[in-house]
Amino acid sequence: MQQMWEEFAATVYPHDDLVVSLRGRSILDELTGLLARHPDTVLVFCGAGFTSYPWLLPVTTAVEADLPHIVHAKQARAAALTADGVLPEREVVHLPLDLSRAADREQLVARVRELSAGRPVGYVAEGLIYYLPPADAAAVAGLGRRWQAVMSVVSYWPEAAVDNPVLAVQRKWFRQRSVPEEATHFEFSQLAALLGAEVRNFSLEEQQRRYLGEVRLPEHALVPEHLAVAVR
Image (tube, rainbow, N blue to C red):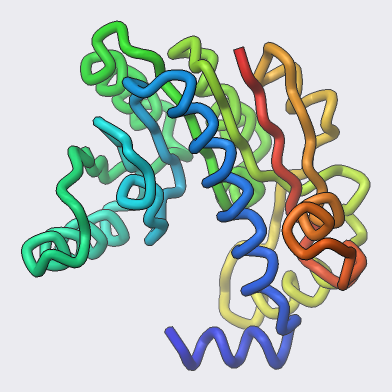
């Protein structure tokens, strides 16, 4: 993994740590505010990867959905760290699902309804939808509405950034590794319609101003990840 990161940094761009850190901090702060208002919220994370939100927040129940091999690796690691006292005890339900499949999405919808049992739901789709075909990307982005989520947070690449130079280099890097290079971009208005309610948008430049006090790198020098946040 370290070797792949170093190769990506040298070949594509060296700022992915900045983008991911800004995204993670923004999501963490949004969820912190949500739990202050609704402490019993069930948090649902799609594209959960190896994020740590359930252990960084005072959440009662969390659901994490990702591809089976990722879920199984994280589940084992989280169990080991909890047993060692590194992580606090949390109710985290790990679901090995392929969210590009409609049947798996329906399984997720049903499981969350069962677990929430009338409690509020907060939904996060992070680092995911741009790698899905358009119809599947839209379906995953809109999952929060299936639960009437009190908050939905979706990271996405805007349509205006389709010619972003970093993404062009990344596509070449993907091709060399037989990774599908197609990506789905959204206009903010499209995403807002999928999320419903009042939706705010946070660009990378806005996130830099929020946490760094200034824009250190323009968006065209970064993978152009935006966050759409819907609150009911």
